[in-house]
Amino acid sequence: MKLSGSEVGLAITQAMAFSIYLQFGIIQSVQVNNNLVAVERIVQYDDLIQEPKIVPAVTIPRGWPQRGEILFENVILQYHEDSAPILNDLSFSVGGGEKIGIVGRTGAGKTSIVSTIMRLGIVTGTIRIDSYDTQYIPLDILRSRIGVISQDPVLFSGTLRYNLDPLQEFDDNVLYKALEKVELGKTSKEFKNLDYHILEEGSNLSLGQKQLICLARTIIREHRIILLDECSSNVDADTDNLIQNIIRKDFDQCTVLTITHRLNTIMSCDRIMVIDLGKIIQFDKPNVLLQDAEGKFYEMVNKKNEMQEI
Ligand SMILES: Nc1ncnc2c1ncn2[C@@H]1O[C@H](COP(=O)(O)OP(=O)(O)OP(=O)(O)O)[C@@H](O)[C@H]1O
Image (cartoon, rainbow, N blue to C red; front, top):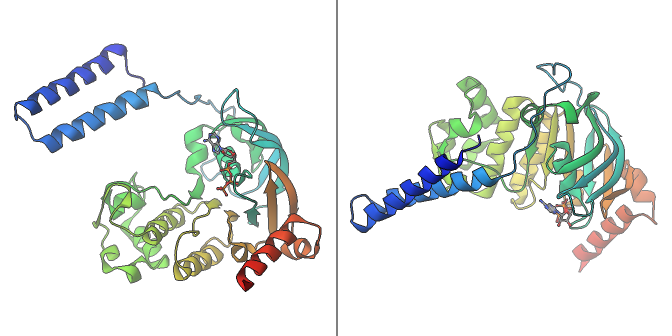
């Protein structure tokens, strides 16, 4: 939605009027504050550069992606037009149902792979998902068909039901089943009630509980491709184990890309991708990488073991 100059002007005038009313004690200060923040947000959103509207050349099937294959061909990612590429000429393919671990030092470009798949930033080269070139897929379709769980879970002020299913697409039974799978009820009995109220950004929940709600959301949607970006890095060992078990059981048929600093989390993956300075420097089965004494992965594993011995 693009506001006209007069609409933005009207919003600002209304905000000013509210602040005058406040000085005269006409309306409650909390209400005024909320209204001012709302106007401020509208003005901020209005300044955002709009993403391109993509008209697909072919019809995207309802069930896309079905196989979950990902193909990168000479992909480059920049976050701004005049900035240097963050990912440099990446080419690789992932088969449907494969479990891939992605590792590399801080700032290597791991999260940028997720950004690229979701087409956040300026992407050149070709990314195909089940043979469909993602540059021709409308962004709302692309982003709603891939499950992403990051280290900063996104939750809204509203009921548990609203947070699990904001568009009210699923039966309560489906939501309850997903909650059972992620064992949220074991952390607090409040989570057995879909009307339980969650505060803005989930401020009345622990990080682990927030992650489990995001996991439940992904289970409900039965995504074929799931991108996990450090989703269990800041939770306790029990929640981490629970998350890993759910991924193994419920996402068995899915293509899962797991970004992590915890190397033990990805040892059971089919293949591990090592990223450095925006390039893939190794991509192979864990046992192959562990035997390559000259390789980066070998160095990372041994450094970690040394740290544990100290
Ligand atoms: N939105 C952004 N705008 C501009 N530069 C960005 C943006 N996001 C990431 N970068 C830059 O891209 C590079 C790669 O960042 P990325 O988050 O992909 O690394 P990472 O390997 O996931 O790191 P970490 O392990 O610390 O999360 C970094 O130099 C970072 O500063």
